[in-house]
Image 1 (spheres, rainbow over the protein chains, first blue to last red):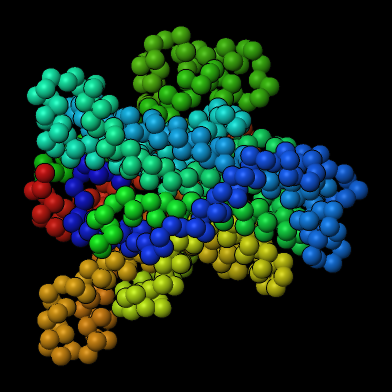
Image 2: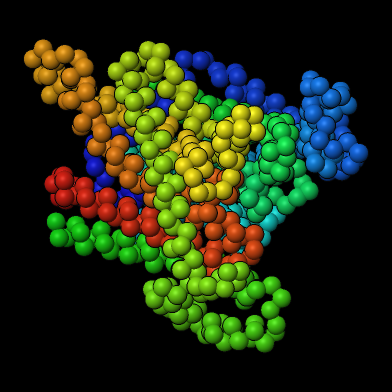
Length: 302
Length: 306
């Protein structure tokens, strides 16, 4: 949406109330232990994938195709979560898939965050034509549906893990830039910034030493909230075949493979990777909500 | 008013130009566009011919001008796969997308508005908590996962609904629900907060003081006004639905614009990808413009503000 164009007061008030409600929803917990432990669990799985994965994630045996999970009739404890259409162990692929999701998710969120925050500060503090240029690009890119834009970029640069990170950063930096710019606009009117100007600090120094430390909190909260979005987008791209290239085990790819066996009733190939995506995204969103409320006292009062 | 409209039109035009430049820029900057714009296995002579046609030896701005004037004339090139003009292809798929979006919108409003009202009226009660969980799930469970789980349940286990394709009413139900899922949560959240806003206003207090029954206060006085922002959002979302349905349409093999985009990627049919993204972006820019203008007509404060 074009925020520099006037928006109706009623809608914008209603929208800010909406946000407050969503973010305030889980403020009661002192520390969101459940989301933190879910994220930690996936992070540990990602880091120690080589140690804990019981089988090779990329090579299976064709004699062991479509084995159901261990607790279903016909399943064995050798393949706890069953096997896929190439006889690969689903549990091992889920564990390695966590690595892909975590690495791509965190890197993309950080790259987009650094880019967006920098441009947001420049835009807000310098104003003038720099502001106009950055904000016009931001508005235009925000108008493109994120997934469609990402698909277009993926079609242009071709699939690889590195490219996915670049694509996601290119699509999502605008969200940071828009928010950070807004904060900088009010920060630069504050006394400590004026004092710095009077003291003769250069614009560069003010942006680095006065402005940046004051927007870092917001950037971190945004990054946490973006993590879920980025992971879903990566999974969607992989699902469509323009994300992480096979045979690497990414959850989105597993879902695409799983769809082939869906009508035959091989439910575990869809439900298990799906559950992983859902859990991780849910946890990231909950943690983001909690951080948001913690860093923004205004929301706590609502 | 006139000045406002002109300024807003200017912004929209600038957005459209930036949009086309973005697409143009990424196609040129990432390497040799002839690789993207020619079919795999094209001959060296073909590549040379295209280079000439695109004028790759000429300055970038001249190239951009050529590109822009082609688009304005509605010339998005030929689809490699279908051998027809891309624009024709796009418009042949648009009705399916619209049909899907309308049903999905119906789902999202039928679910979103009543649950939003209930959450607002029973503030902090059971309904409100349920609403919070639903809002979070709507944001966290991606639509393609909803779609796959629906297929698993309704097609594989129950055998009630067809898992893919189009043609009957039964075909549209699952993709529409999967697409409407996220938007239902969004519509619920906005209905709730909009209702809360209205319920706290003076005229609702007056209606209550007059001794009107609560049902009438909520149903007649509050609900109507609370609906305005929700319907505005719904209007924007309808256009968004046409453009974000690529995953859902792929899961259910629904023959819409999203599916066209997916085919474009799978067959390396680049003109199709480029056109779909451009037209989609343009649609959203235009809708944003219309909403702003509409609001300016309704609400004079906006015309004179800033």
